[in-house]
Figure 1: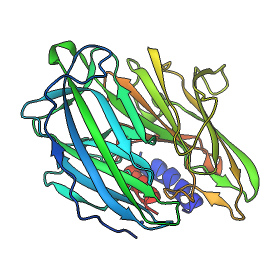
Figure 2: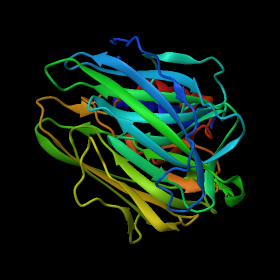
Figure 3: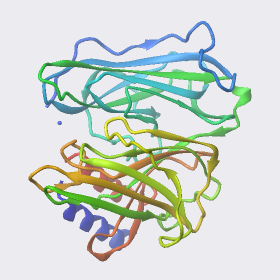
Figure 4: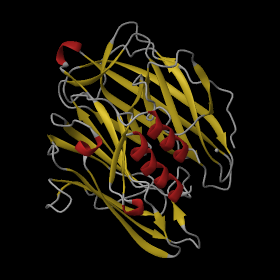
Length: 355
């Protein structure tokens, strides 16, 4: 990934205009709702489960790739999803579950796909509901909050897998959607994906990246947003991700994400009860720390041999799903969001994540 080219392209765009794979034979399929209410029901409002499966795909030793399936849920009527539960095999790096109102044709066998393409879509008809990096990950939304899914909702499941072992292994995943009693739901949830492409790690050295993202500068209205969960994201050189909120880049920071033990391949999701809000004039202060133990410089990119500095935050009431970046490359100070900034930025980010 050529960081300079991306950062210059981002800056220029604002000024002028605002992986090899093996495929498994067994198809993923939709399971009918369970006959009884889900067992884990902290709010006592869940009424049915709907499950989808990804894979299996046989993954060769050291093989890394991203593959997707498109599947319809078996729900005959509209449902309010209050809880999501993802389980991943050992060869999985991360899984993204999208609500997809854009694609209409099922693809049950995993096929190669562009990473994060659903998150960067400018139509607003596809967005991530949950991003999982743990092998067993459950997200319960706050009381009276849900994702609304249409009858037989199309779901896109994107798997980024990596087999670090010396023998082939199957990559698999299951996503379970727990529906709530609709009369108990008041607000719609959504997700923000925030980070920076400003990553240049020198060989055999520690490094720290510290940035401040101001939603208002990116024309993103979060005045009423309540954030209830947050997860950090790096690749294998990452030592920690810390996120806070502040009134200005130089104001005191209130921590909202600072795991005592950060594991890059299974980072903690921190939940907030009560939820936290961001000052409309302020923003997110975030820091990623690394030790580059390799003999080469490492830059921003999608592969686990590249690096990232991102976090995603779940919030309500929904003001859309957004992928946002802060960059200071070349002395600039830019806060940008896709799709708000338009198709040009989304295309640049899409290209960056795919190289």
